[in-house]
Length: 116
Image (tube, rainbow, N blue to C red; front, side, top):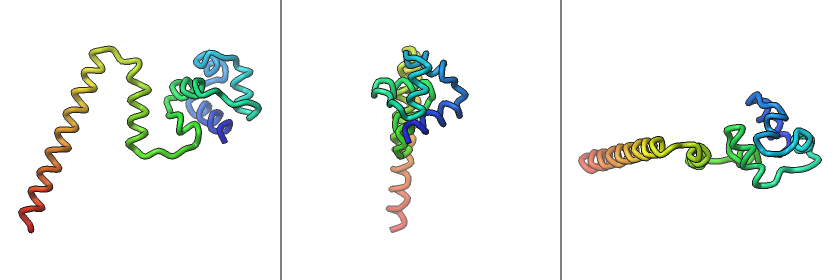
């Protein structure tokens, strides 16, 4: 299953075995061995594969995630490439969404209290 997922995701993303190998720091032969099921990537290699393909390690492993886990993993993967300004912008957006969510909850609680 792991080997099939690596191959399927790589092909879906239009990444060659050589491109994958360069991203992970290995050879195209090693990628070929992963995809044929002869060998499996190390955990550290799985992280690099996931980053190259823009997916989660859990997706490569065939594990299901809830939407919150997927979002956290995407942010964790992307944030390493962010500069300070982008991190600050993301922080402001998250804080704004949090405050909006809290406001909506308070409004809904107030509305439901009035109808009782």
